[in-house]
Image 1 (spheres, one colour):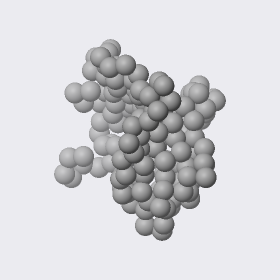
Image 2 (cartoon, rainbow, N blue to C red):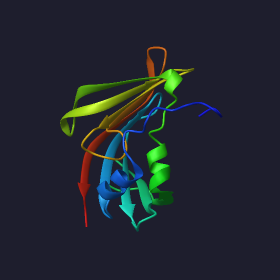
Image 3 (tube, rainbow, N blue to C red):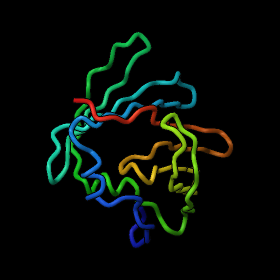
Length: 153
């Protein structure tokens, strides 16, 4: 965000995200990037505490194998700030969205600039958007769809 720019309120507070992301919360996503074959990505919350967590991420191959996991430290505030959008370039509205998780009431944020970036956050599922896409003109460059969201021990 530009220095001095004001932002819209984030979809969730850091506290809401912390309570919704216990160790073992696992999100499977379909990642579709222009010019690339679709890929399945997995994010799993690990080592959760009051200040933050470790997120393990890996790709699942079509044969069922997976890439080595990458581990990233994140604070709850850092995760909250992923949903911070500039007020002067963002349209926000509440919409119904049909997803692999079902029909969801979502807050949709559309950010305009060189690209148009749209994020749909399920109002009952604090954390990452259940769908997001980046476009240049009418052509999608990136679409990420959450396919499943569960706590796995």
